[in-house]
Image 1 (cartoon, helix red, strand yellow):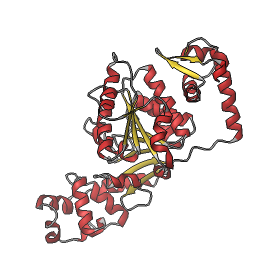
Image 2: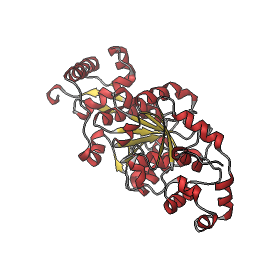
Image 3: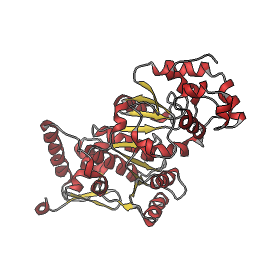
Length: 366
């Protein structure tokens, strides 16, 4: 292949089928930048990789894929980050196998923010999704970027909770950045690309494949300071993420649930293995909050939140009520109510009850 510029040399290296991340890192450690790898002679390369890998490295013509990726990155809001770039997430440099190249859509500067991963079942219960939205919103307001995988169920609810609170969110996907899966989350993905970041290590055009999702899980945990698991079966990708978090030195949190619910058994296993049991957002902040700056709100936003809280307390009365009942009485969405109810619970003004119900506490305790 003819010589190409420094930026495209990274793409040429990473778009060679058969030259995986481990081989790429060995070559970079030995020679430095990709253009120096391609300038090396066979004798020097043979000290690092096999003859078969050398043939792939020097003889593969992937110029059309390199050009397509380069053109993609020239579009507004689309970026290719290499290990040598300042915008490459520093948190990923701490894991054993950081991707050589990342494809990003959105605001790359947000990758420098402290983050919490929230993951869980695709087949989540309504209460599980409500918990994910509420915890994501409360923790986003505390200054954490919410990281998840854009899957149905808990992942999507966590992303929506962060966005509803005006916070930031990162979606790490298991397809190419130009392909989104599942299709039902298309509108959510568009909003994340506008207000947060969509991130992938896979080349453009990579379709959804089962093997890619466990692989991307190490990036979800690697980007975060901790992982919160909300509903997970015993055999689930969420437990893979939690295991990787532990191996990477990240905190692991889990929300307990009913002993009769299969979606709770994975969380219960994590707790038995040493994960921190979480009942409120403050349980997470106790572990992570010492260096995190809470999101700042204007006086008008504070007054609006206080007004909404008072409105919900009035609508609730002192009987146990469900989210659906409060939706009918207040005119607010279930998502907005979940966020405010969690804050009221943290403030000791309401209590959550079995069956997804809430009860206002006695007036003297307000």
